[in-house]
Image (cartoon, rainbow, N blue to C red; front, side, top):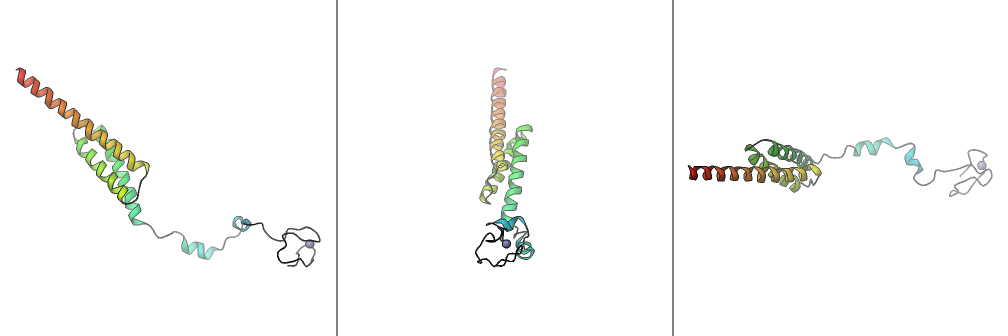
Length: 133
Ligand SMILES: [Zn+2]
């Protein structure tokens, strides 16, 4: 390898010129900071879209939204809680185990059990009132 600075003929493996000390080659991995060959990278990117994972992600979003709504909306929250748990399971089956799927599962269970308990207490108190009158 010929030094581009002083023209001294160095061995091909030399990192620095023996004559003048000029750096002859980039250290390992140094090329990644500079020029990148465009062709193969552009062909490989974007990668093939994983539709299964994408639908799993949207399922996890639906799960979280339904889960939160299940806590907020009275009575219908039971149905929304079931939907949230179902979509959370769907997301997990599709390989998505993110925070949204977990949040959907947790809020779904809270919404479902919370309103179920509320309705049970309501029915219980109503039957108590009915039995006393
Ligand atoms: Zn040199």
